[in-house]
Image: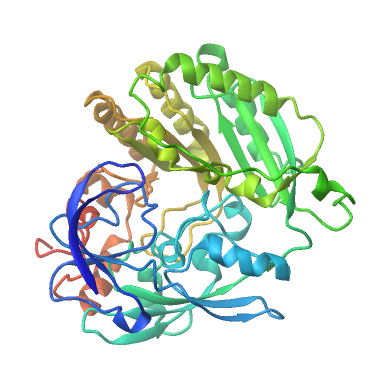
Length: 449
């Protein structure tokens, strides 16, 4: 394995830390070290979950073989470094799709397990771990163990959502879902304020397999929380119109070639964009067909889109609020953001279903809000602490895969099953060899315990 020390960050480009990188070329080279180690796939977690300041980071990007694909049963087995993009290229032409997908396909299969990612269909289908049939996990002592919901299940559910801290996820077996076409039928519905938008997200007559809402983060006063609810499902053969494919011009992928200056994303520019987007997407009154790339992965068409936020980077703040108090909690978060006069380029609301079995999994029954906030000054972190307080008051939690600055005290309050997780962590990794900057910041599994 090649080893080098280099500055490294997550997708938010904050924080930047110096890490010793190992890049194994084959599966047999995946092994623990006698020093602190964390595995890293594509580096698409936003904060410090896949960083290890002054420690070792194991890059799994070249350990990405697709090992077995049962086309009849829709079961895929692959090395954990394989990306969702690589998997989709193989399974979609065969009539299968991912059971759960986050908002980018440029993430690794192992990363999806470690973060127990969720998608627009969580309120119906749960998170990624619900569809994982089994994994091979490489433990701190070098042994390789198979675990699943029925075999070594405690270790399995400590690993699903466990942020890579129980071992190196080597292989993953995943159950796919059948599709009739590679298009999604979508319905948009505009809402003039948060009350209307929240009502739409609760409306069973508007609901579909996938549901998400875009929020105009710049709207204030009577229009606070205005947005567009977008629901969809995989189009059936009956819904797919002949000739439609040829009518769609393929989108060319474009990359951001440089870091935008700090002033580029400001209140005026974001307000102008949001106003245009609200009119354009909110004006679509009838159901329409969308390619799955455009629906699930709109930002993937822009390479290095994180450079829009400039050299200082950004924080994505994603939280979930319990269903019973979600309206009040989310409204308070939006009001605090509005009062701060700090623009969020992206604000997304999703409905989540029942809490899963992952001991440190993020989702619980309620609503999740995600905000992209550029780092301009230290005042941002004062605002984020205020948002934490609102989330805690409403029994919610922050998503660890997006986090870069949560306190250990808040983490303990947000994740009540941490002690259960810790017992398993200490059994399989008593010397805490699997450690990350996130785990040390949150005081997870170290000697202080």
